[in-house]
Image 1 (cartoon, rainbow, N blue to C red):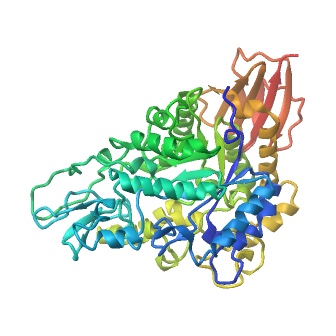
Image 2 (image 1 turned 90 degrees about the horizontal axis):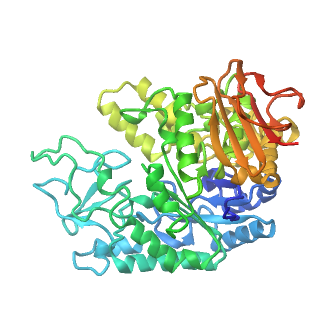
Image 3 (image 1 turned 135 degrees about the horizontal axis):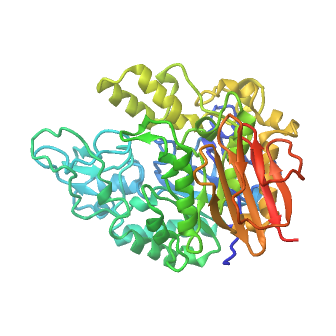
Length: 564
């Protein structure tokens, strides 16, 4: 068993724009985060992942970086950032920073140089191509709608942008660019950070020929297509990550997690297997696509418990003993997990606790997204003008032009839009949820009077206190971190149950995923003499025999089973 601090940690993700505003301008900032460090310490988390706070024109909320070594004015200064790092470290917590190096901002000095002329020394830091028959170089579509190419008048060529046109893709095939990135990473690590979360890191290597998907020959491009087979897990991605590890990561005791679009467990193991010297873990998207239809993210279909069980089991089994899982059910790019997988109206407390039990009793490192620990929910704004996310706004325009009804578009946004996870953190029942004394950059969720930190801290039965206990249990029981995984009663339509094993101990987790009661029979062959109830989201007599259980709506129970 290869023990590591990052396997035993619980990570808390902060989206700084929405966390806490200290100066009344309506935008969360570094001093706001500093003011809440004791809150994070009380919750018991070990690591903070900070979404980008670098200098940025903010086209994609900071994921378009114009200077990797300075702080965005909205958030404060480098000395504020240093105070934050010191505040975390003195409280025994660690800090990982967001590394966004598939693309930069078009306002980065490298790109300003790159677009000046075709023979500029920085030209090859980005991916430039001439057009084809008066059209884009190929038919790739951007993740944010429309083509993945933008024409530049200055040099009469197109540059590639898999995301916004203000996010040109960096050319990782250029050795000098890679050197500059490694130097920048080293600069941050030497300042004392504890690792990186790497944005869309498995997209950095493209097939050099950049072939089209449909290869239409007409002079009008009828459609843009997802070109993923030419840039997802591209030809040199492992070579570049091994180089990054050799040149930078291996020299520090840090944690790394890579966002990896479209990876299977087999592909993920190439990134995270301990003998390959790349990353510690990846965020995969298979579970996040469980309610997407054939039309993709916005084609919303009801999720099925059988699919959730199958996906989680596959990842738990495939990476066991080879690599390490990351565990999450929401983040800044996803809707709120309570609204998506639980019942935020009839059983908000019970279902939030049940989902938390799932996240914190699997093998892997759990990631809590800000507000999850108090049961924050999706939001339904009345008008598209209330939304700020570039992905939502582009989709709205495109779908309206394609003839979709406004009602169906708004319904998809209510269920899957990224702004669901970006409404300001709900600190209190005061005006603007105690987030700001000004006008917030994105409106607060109107339910803040009922769902907020102040109320959660006062209520011993709150979701917050349940999270706190789950985190404590992980620290007390090695089996929760390192135990193997085995699914139980796989065909049960309402219950997700599994067994974790380590040495002589067994951990039994039983979760009712729905708002109606059900019964659960412990399968034969699970041998134990003693049972200890570690945690449950309802009152349970710890001595009740567990061979047959009657479960209430969204009930969760975790037992430690031992031989006498």
